Image (cartoon, rainbow, N blue to C red; front, side, top):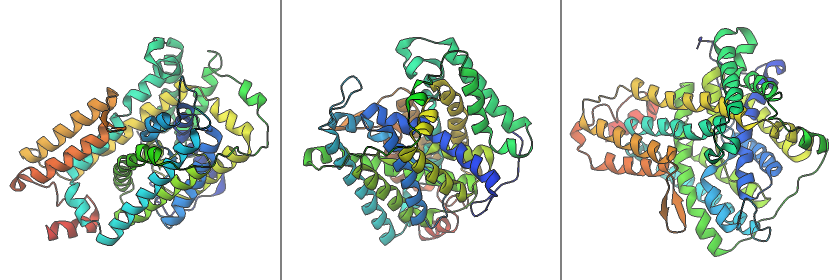
Length: 445
C-alpha cells in the first residue's frame, strides 16, 4: 500500500472530511455489533445506540486521548444465550433481563481490575506481558478472526453447512478489491476512506446478485424510539456471565497495545481509565437492554489502513451510532441491509492488518529468537491461540467457556514466569514496548 501522511490522535479535521471518515468507522463496526444481539436475542437497534453512547463515555473517561470504538463483545455470546434460553435463534423474553443483569456485574469487574491497576501501577503488567507474548497475542487477535471473515465471504449466513456460494465469493472479492484499490492507487481524500468506499462498491455490486433485501428499509420509520429492556439480577445468571469479563479484559489490553503500536504513542498509563470506560459502558448498556462492549479490532484495522488516528472521528462515530440506533430506524435498517459477503470482504483486509501489526511489534522490538525462551513462548502461544480460534474450539470451565485467545494468553504468562530468565534476550527490556513505562519496569526487574 502507498504510504500517506499520518494524522495523529489530537488532529482536528474539517467536517467535510471528518464526517465520511467517521461513517467509515461506523460501517466497519456495524456488522459484528449487530450480529451479537441477533445471536443472543437482544435488540440490534439498542445495541447500536448503546455502542455509540458507550464510545462517548469511554472517550470522556480517557480524556479524549485514545482512539477507540466500543462495539458488541463476542466473548459473552454463549453465556448470554444460555441464560436467555436461546433456542433456534429465539430467546425467552422473560429470561433476557437476567442475562442483562449478569452483564451489568461483568462490567463492574472491569472497574475493579482498573482500580487494582490504578493502585499498584503497570510495572507488574509489563513483567507478565513481554513483547514476545504481546506480539504473538496481537497476531492471534487478527488471525483468530480469519475464519469469521472467510465464512462471511463464502457461505450463506456465514455457515459452511450451506455450501460454497459463488455469488457471495464474487461480491466479497469485489469489495476486497475495491478497498485495496482505493487505498493503494487513489490519491487525495478517496485514499483516506477506502473501507467506506469499498463497502459502497460492494453494496452496489451485491444488488444484481439479489443479495440486498430492501424490505426492511422500506418498512422502517424515519423517526422512532428504542425499545428498552431493564436488567434484573439473579445469582445463578451472574455466576454464569460475570467471570467472562476476565477474558474481555485480556482482549482489551491486547487492543490497547495494538493501538500503541499503530499510533506510535504510549497509552499504557491510561489503561485504568480505558478499562473503566469499557466496564462502565458495558454495565450501562446492559441496564437498558444493550450488548456488552469491547474495543473493536475492526476500527483499529481502519486506522491501520488510513493512518488517520484522530480521536475526533470517534466522537462523531459514537454520536452517529447513538442517533441512528436509537432514533432513526430507517438509517439503521439501511446499514443493516449491507450483505454479509460485503462485510466479509472488508474483514479479510482489516483482520489481516491487525495480525500484521503484531508481526511488526515482534520485529520492531528486536526480540532475539535464537533464545529458546522467546522461541518457545511465541510458538506455543501462536499455535494454541490460532488453532483454537480458527477451529472454533473453546475449553469448558464450569458454566462458561474459555476461547483460544484467552487461554493462549494465560499459557503465555505462565511460560513467561517459569522459563529460565537467562534466556530472555530482548523480551522484557525492548524500548518499543510500553515506552518509558516499559523502561522503568526493566530497570526494576
